[in-house]
Image: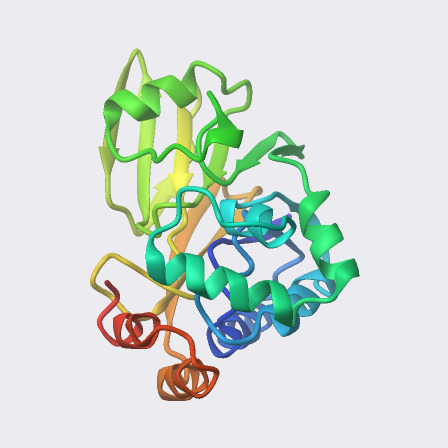
Length: 241
């Protein structure tokens, strides 16, 4: 089975379309979506529908998905994110918001775990940035491989007695190891690389490969500005920050 693992789309339809087109060329069988389909960018409704129309094996809730399903002031969001969320709620249908709010925090598929943030407290939206926070997540990981998002930065943590973390291009899944793998962000990378990020996991070769693809970033930026969303949302796309 060949899984495409996508996360943090953040309503960036141009990036999502480019990722899906790339996945089709690589004959992906199924998709795993690790949350934050909406937020920040200008096509939340379209991205929700695009994801729902994929051959999904699993999808989990992100913190922006959770807030999109609710009313009132977004909790724990900085100003630009909060303003974007208020606009996002208006762009989504009642049914789309309900669907986002009914997603699980964690799912288990074919021996794989998917979670947006961390397994030790998935509903609290903690970031996994270092070995300490990775260890806390590993303490609750029953599968060999877990995919996560949330930080928008691709990184792999390996555990075999001790926990090691590093950037990656390919990860060969080895016996007696556990893996916690962040696939980066489709729609708002934050690792200094503007290219849309996702991973493909081939369960036969047992290799996870990180992919980066270009997309029409200028159109994505223009849509943000025309919609009246915070300019910061547009400007950060061009340098991956």
